[in-house]
Image (cartoon, rainbow, N blue to C red; front, side, top):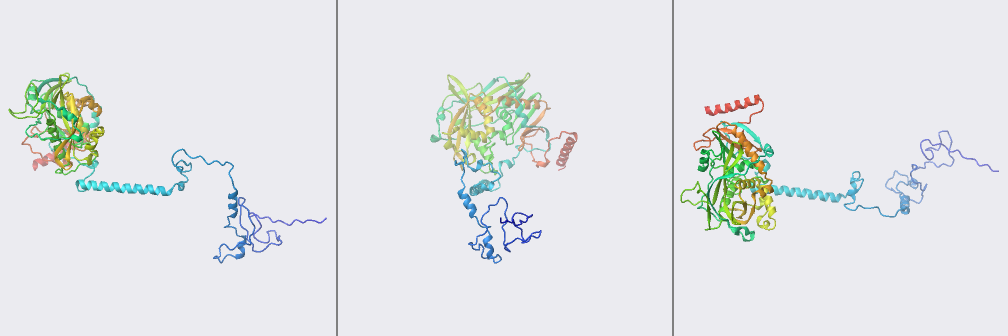
Length: 569
């Protein structure tokens, strides 16, 4: 039998395949082993293909360093085997993978955060480009908006600096400061008031104005021959007479009380003069006070031009609003009709003088067991309802430029009146709240709001009436979130604070920047005709005293230094 001899298989400790050299480490020589034959490295997971292909050409002929004979054993760039395997591969389950029911496919990918490169890059670039373009457009609009309104120097409402309504003098002594946050927690209920006296006369309301629409607007007329009176508390002869008769302890007017009641909604600065005479307290306003005007866009976020001579500045709009309000209250009355006269005539009019239709109701509220408040309240008209007379208050909202409010009354009043009122509540929250408070104080049965607009946005002399809407004061107060108990709680707290002061004159000033009021003790001749006010810089004005004794002493010393400088000067 022929024997079969098994050749020696050398052991390769460095990997799979034959050794690199023809001789092994133990001296065994491999028979018939070609010299200089390369072997492609591989691992267990690699696919095994042909050992050599002598029909192939050199895949990289430019590389002269590679031996052309070696190309037969080089399969590094050959993917024919993988292609064959992929073509013959088939899934057992032929159903397509489930897709999400809504939204883009990649949004619900579980590996979204790990595979961000799989997102559609072109769509992201388009979105980013649109965002950058929108940012540029908005910046360009804001820049042009500010340039057109005040020459490019107009700051935003958040950065606007408001001035104080009265200049703080060095000899004034600040007694206390009250933040508005404490007012929101106050509550006080008062019983129904009693009428002490009614003066003046009222004309009847013309109900045809309730049917006015922007399509049949009416021109606002001017009543130059009728006189309107804005008399303060201590100049009222009726209040002086009631004070001498000891009818009450506190005396004020409806405009002053409404300013106190709606103080947390105010933005602009205002001031009220308080006089303590004996055991009585009088709330007054200065001559030419801001209380005689009507603020416009006070609570709006859009800034108004700061130039005083601009027709859309805060001061010009306040004068225009007061002018519109007076003429509107007289135009909506029945011409040459009947007139309701009260017990006494208008206490401020001379004999034979033509006065506006207004009725003064002197009313008394009980604040405490031995404390009463008397206020002069105004109503502008009367109407017959079911054989009974109902009192009305007449006020007008004015539109000066739709670009500021964003709502054009001529287009929205008929179809979206609620949107127009909501915009006015946002821009003029304090003014509407004060009108509502005055109507509640006067116990008016209805408050009429007129919508008056300019004929042209640049014409502040000619106006038209677009609509007139009526509301019940208490229901409207609920609608604008005006709490009557909170209103009286604010008045009661201020009255209690002032009753603790000694006799003298004081001024209550709303801070022009911070939401708070301050009480100053002023000289007896302050705000008189011969009293000259010299405004001081902000850093030299009297600062609030600190809580510790050292801070209080330093504040007093600083005040004395300022007074010494004034005396030496």
